[in-house]
Image 1 (cartoon, rainbow, N blue to C red):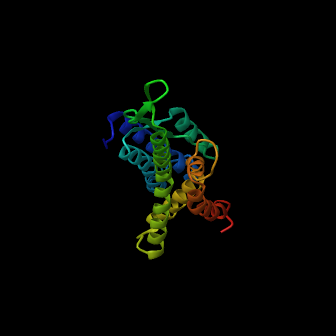
Image 2 (tube, rainbow, N blue to C red):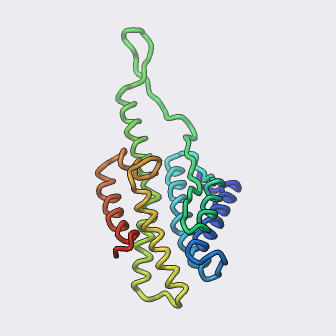
Image 3 (cartoon, rainbow, N blue to C red):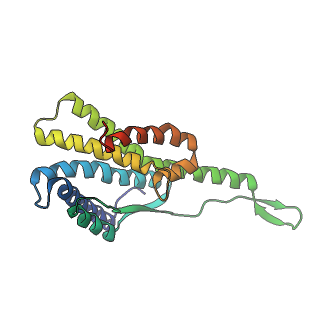
Length: 222
C-alpha cells in the first residue's frame, strides 16, 4: 500500500533539514544566510527527497514494504564536514523487503512420488524479481535526470524572476545532474551497480551518458 508512516516522515524531515544546513554552510559559509537556505532547499528537496521517494513508491508498486530510514551518523558527518569545506554525506536509504513470499508452484515428482518446485516457474519468478529490482533501482536516478532536464529548460526559459531563484534553479540542476551521475556509478551499494548487474544495456544507454555529461561539469571543465 502506498503511504508514508509517521516514523518515515520524521526521518525524511530530519534528513532534509540536515542536508539543507550542510549545503548552506558548504556554499554560504558558517553563518547561515536565508538566500542560501532557499537555494539549498530547492536542490535538496528535489534531488534527495524525490530520489528516495521514487525508490519507495516504485518498490511499493511491486508489492514490497519500503520505508526510508535516516542515517543519523551520516547526517551528522554531512553537517560537520560542511564546516570543513567539503561534504561527506550518507543521509540514509529506502529499506525494502517483501510483504509476502512469492507464490511458488509445484509439479509431481515421478521418482519419489511427491512434488517439487516447478523449474520453469522458478526461472520466470527469478526473471520477474530481477526486472522489479532493476526498475526500483532505476527509479531514483531517472527522477534526478528528469528533474535536471526540467531545471535546465526552466533556467533557459528566463522565467526565473530574481537572482535568488536563478541561483536556486542552477543549483537544483547541478545537484540533480551530479546525483544522477554519482548514483549511476556501477560500484558498491549504488543504484548503478544494481542496474549494471540487472541489464548492462540499460546502464550503457542511460547511466554512461549521464556520467559523461556530469563529469566535466563537476570538474569545472565546462
